[in-house]
Image 1 (cartoon, helix red, strand yellow):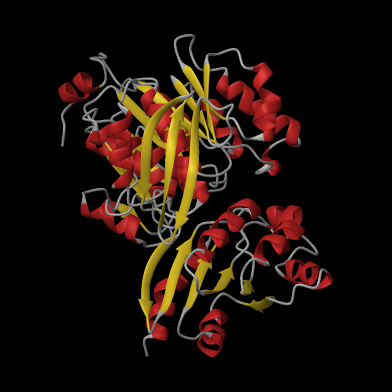
Image 2 (image 1 turned 180 degrees about the vertical axis):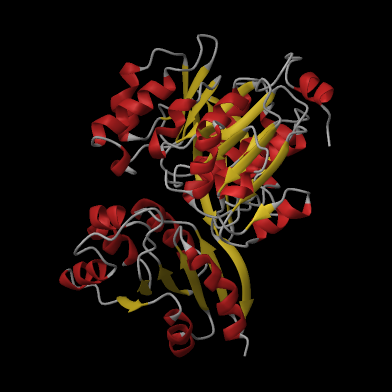
Length: 471
């Protein structure tokens, strides 16, 4: 563990980080975005503890490195913490939040804490509706392999690492900048990377225009010496581009992009493509993560790192060794020639991309989809039906509510009903999550690919399916 002197050296010799704050408590520490920040601060020498209702691989890892995790929310958990960090999903009625306020202890959102860390280095903030975790991880991989030793904070677990965070000695900090709850507006990155923009999290905004305005605000927070990396093929970004007041560089598949992917060849488990910068041929890239969307993700990472003077050859070599991110087309195993994949997709565009990727494996595709949030399901149920038609069989389980209360008339069944109205007979509602085990046992056969899909608890069904199918 580093002492305070080492912290000051790593972070530009600042006299003091966070003033007198030396001990922090994280409410919901097992969350994808929370655990990484907690681990970074712990490795910087701060005393860290936290709480989470669920015992997971993430919480077990945190405990293994010396971070205490309580599995119940009680006032006494916060101990002598100087500050309490909460995610956007934690409410004002949380016992630990109530206790912190009673004591006069600062309660701050995760985004604010991340924003403070980003201020201390040359920061690269990756925002967008899809692909943030993957692009962040790719940039981190390229920089690490190029010897830049970055600090990286992602909202997921990098395959083979067991963690979503890495503390580096270098001058760069690479982090996800999430638009949910306007979180990215707590950040002032030196470089802003936009993966794509679609209507999402509209429950946190006053409509799509408000969401788009927030993206413009985020991009224009880049300092005058910074840079915006944006998707040339994105229609919403094209509309917003005239409002940018900062220098910018684009990436995409079309000839107008500053960094262009050409000659894309998709294959089972990966892809190959050629990269041009303007009209100059840079070379070929070979990816071991599947899907056209990952070609776009890789191109964003190449553009970002080359603009920071990383040679193309080093970027391409690093991407060739990139092993992906957990829950992003994450192949969990194969039993009796039935492949089980776990995927985080919870937006129609993400589902479509995942299923198009699945098609490259030449297997019958069975999806077990758990819709995430009542508001999102109510808004996109028609689009979900359209996306899920790409599966051979799509099994719908009950909505994972997360932070929300039920909405009258909004259930997983409205996706099934809309699908049947359109003549799609491959989509079936099966009720509780646990029902998928028996259903899969009845319908699966050798040569199938089964995908557990969604941002909720459906991920725990993947290992359960492997066990059930092996019997």
